[in-house]
Image (cartoon, rainbow over all chains, first blue to last red; front, side):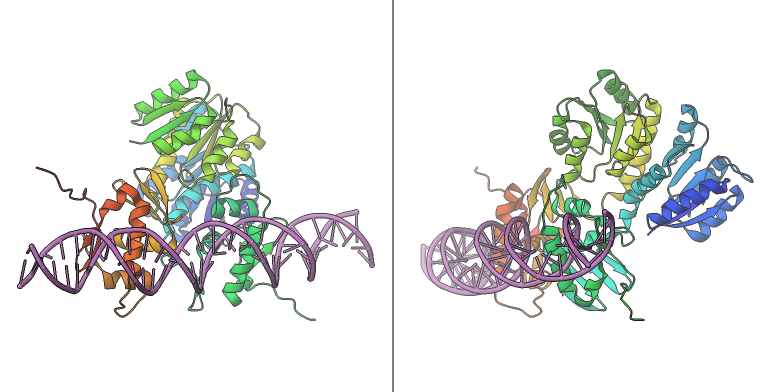
Amino acid sequence: MSKILVVDDEPDISELISLHMMREGHECLCITNGLEVMPSALNEQPDLIVLDLMLPGLDGLSSFKRLRADSRTRSIPVIMLTAKTQTTDRINGLELGADDYLTKPFSPRELALRITAILRRTKKVTHVSEVKTGEFLLDRKNMKFFYKGQPIDLTTTEFKLLAVLMENTAAVHTRAELLREVWGYSDDVATRTLDTHIKRLREKLGDAGKHVVTVRGTGYQFSMEAPAVAVAA
Amino acid sequence: MSKILVVDDEPDISELISLHMMREGHECLCITNGLEVMPSALNEQPDLIVLDLMLPGLDGLSSFKRLRADSRTRSIPVIMLTAKTQTTDRINGLELGADDYLTKPFSPRELALRITAILRRTKKVTHVSEVKTGEFLLDRKNMKFFYKGQPIDLTTTEFKLLAVLMENTAAVHTRAELLREVWGYSDDVATRTLDTHIKRLREKLGDAGKHVVTVRGTGYQFSMEAPAVAVAA
DNA sequence: CCCCACAGTGACGAATGTGTCACATGGGAA
DNA sequence: TTCCCATGTGACACATTCGTCACTGTGGGG
């Protein structure tokens, strides 16, 4: 899950973006005044900033320049939004070092995808040999999974599968995605191999296996939350 | 300087892009047929690919899928070009994992800036999961070893062994150390397993196997230098 | 030059990992 | 409620990987 800071004057737009981001499993903060950009960025350390150029207080371009002037915020990716459509304006934003640039009106779905595309590239940096997430720990060096300190040996395939699932615990990973990432299948192949490996993974993980959640009709997800349990009334 | 592969049917466009890229200090390769995409990407290992969707031979979307299906090309950023302007099409490209998407007609300057924006981000990352040392490359994610661009599949044990050896190419790794690091043996065990795996590793590595050097009485070392060769007088 | 301990090699059987299939199960739409 | 289809499950055959061992090759001290 990533934290996204949205800076836009129009509440409609902010809300729309917010909604779509949350659907993708991102946390979303919204502010409307250009003067709040730097303080918010410093406080919240967002993973990405969506910045409208038309802002009260301090205009977007100036806000952007300030972000880039400070080493603490310099590396945060920025996607600019604007109502202007002429090419010269688009270039202006990119030239300054924006990571992307969208003109209104835009499809919120497209924005979501562009955000995903950028995060996909920048998130990788966190790729240490151990991924720690709560009581789960993925030891890339020894291809082991630790649950509450207990080590569990995994085979190569099992490990790759779990690694993909744990890379983003907010997202549901489609069957096609998993088959591509783990097995390298390019086109949709009808195979039960994935199912079998999910089963083996769940078996090996024991209690932790409960966190490998089926999303019927779509794929699988590694859920950090305690999985829902049917409770008697 | 980065190497960019441009895949476009129209020579005008290719030339235009080429010109602008060279002005930015990038090397530029142009091809026109979709079928050449994979071979070129494998041979040239470009830093970024500009891909037109309308191509003879094999259409751009299929070419893109192939790029993403192969671990050797999966991580190369791709910017898609297309004449279509509807949002649904733009999303299609991004959804598949393209890093950016431009619709014709576009400003070559904007393309250049988008390329710069993406390279700026990806250059830093340089895949932590890959250890690059000269013409040798260890792909931790896919458990592969690349020698002069050629991929070599390794088994789990082989990979671990090679990883330990390559972690420090200056040091000689003792048998005890290797048995501990790779096999987890704590005390000195008399076993020929290590020898056998060294043999298998050398076989698989082919030419690169020469760099796995025996240090008699002590252990093994991965030597970056071209191994000494007995030369007749 | 002669040893011989250490390293290389090929072969083999056992263990493990993997993909596929047939059948069981169960969620949810009609 | 019924039915269908996506998913779960157990079994199996095949492929890969692994460790061991016996034998061979060899470097360097004596």
